[in-house]
Amino acid sequence: MSAPATLLAVRDLNVYLAESHILQGVSFDVRAGGITGLLGRNGVGKTTTLRGILGLVPRTGSVVLEGAETTKLAVHEIVRRGVAYVPEDRDVFAGLTVEENLRLAERAGAPLRYDLVYELFPELEQRAAQKAGTLSGGQQQMVALARALLNGDNRILLVDEPTKGLAPLVVRHVVEALRRAAEVATILLVEQNLSVAHSLVRDVIVLDQGRVSFIGDVDQLMGDAALARRHLGLAAAGSH
Amino acid sequence: MTTIALLLITGLGLGALYFLIAAGLSLIWGLMRVLNFAHGAFFTVAAYAGWSASGLVGGASPELQWLVAVAVAVVVGGAFATLTEVVLIRPLYARHVGQVLVTVGLALATISLVQGGFGSDPKRLALPAWMTGTTTIVGANIPNTRLLVIAFALAVFALLIFFLRRTRFGLIVRAGVENRAMVQALGIDVQRAFTLVFAIGGMAAGLAGILAGTYYGTIDPGRGTSMLIFAFIVVIIGGLGSVTGSAVAAIVVGVLQQFLNFYGAAGVGDFSVVLLLAIVLLVRPGGFSGAST
Ligand SMILES: Nc1ncnc2c1ncn2[C@@H]1O[C@H](COP(=O)(O)OP(=O)(O)OP(=O)(O)O)[C@@H](O)[C@H]1O
Ligand SMILES: [Mg+2]
Image (cartoon, rainbow over all chains, first blue to last red; front, top):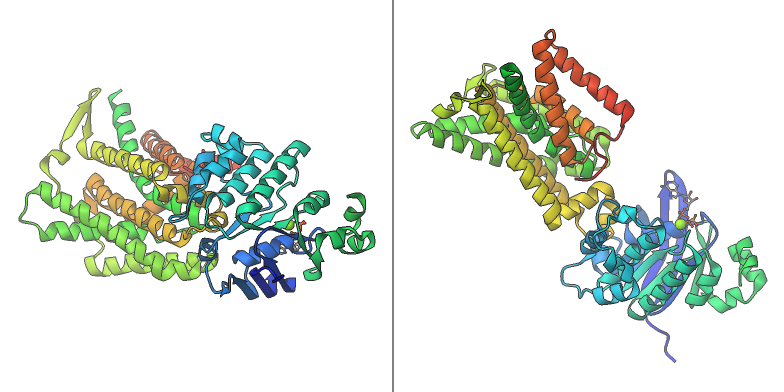
């Protein structure tokens, strides 16, 4: 069986923020299709890795998307090549309505998937005229995911802790949405809820203090309690 | 009663001029975090360009002369602002001290160039006869220029609100005022919105320049700078990034200034505006409006 194509190749990514060396030569591949997990303890550089891929932080190294180097491009140019971002703190535009948040994400020339978005999140259609700032955390997460799903030509979604701070019922909704999203785009998922991560991802990259400490299969990592504890810390011990 | 009506409408006229300057300043700050001290230079250069153009068509009717002055001022204000953004501001994004120095420097250099070229004496702007007349409102003879300036400011306010609420660029500007990085992360070239907002701000400042010439009857090199100071106060009181906030604050500041300068000792009006600024900063640090329109 031939190995699935590499969609995104990160090589020797280095990021300095305020004089600290946050990412210290991070390298990994993301296979096309499915969900790849980017895991690790608090503060190890997961968010910074996603922001580095997008060019939202100054970085050195190489980020190759479908064979093309992207690190010389502006943020909006990288995004237009099909990289969507669902940030950790959701970053919906609070003063804009739900409908305006989605309209802003529309990209000229891209096939728009409003049908998929409203099928996954019917609430967003009902609340189209509501200011995003007045939504619940779960609803804001839906807006953030919807913005990323909307453009049909997105190649990869960078999704940062989408279940953080959400009630269990909403977590299940988000997990279901991610599963559906993975059918239409590749996802690089940062997720601290390890049971959620385990149920969704196939390949895993673990970061530790700005370096890659593990690359492999999710079952291999989660199936070995000692290995999981070593890479993911105490959190891994309590989850299944 | 007649005095109150006169002071009120004169104050509204002054507020209208402040608004035209403040709206651009507010959007520029909200979107780019640039304190644009060069805004007074846009005002002044545009006013002199309009005045010169009106002289060039000196044979035409005063109405046409005035319209030419307005059109030229708007175009020159917009062009000067666009050039400033592209050449001076763009290379300095995120370098705030550099931006302050560059815009202050540009303002000072421009004012002295204008002074060198045109002299410091005020220049009389040719006005159609009806503008120098008055209209009687509740017994007060209101100079028509006051009403004209107010009408222009209302039109610009309506246009800006339409632009912000109904166009895609407006959507980008409102979102950018909230979170610039996330706008980029949606694949939008924020830089283009920056340039456009500078152009719009410059056009409004240019209009303010020629309308101030209409309101006071003359154009001089120093007015842009003194009005800029009050416009900055309006921007802060109104809430940075908010056009509606600027409009409300401009009315409050203009009217307050007129009334207190009339009923109080000289300078009390100006001082009270600064006092109002201090109070607003203490009570509502975000200004009248924290919102993005
Ligand atoms: N703007 C910044 N300036 C300086 N240091 C920063 C900045 N942003 C993040 N850091 C530091 O970089 C490190 C990595 O942060 P990052 O947010 O990437 O971690 P993370 O793995 O996403 O953490 P979490 O699980 O808490 O979300 C942390 O130690 C953090 O304190
Ligand atoms: Mg993080």
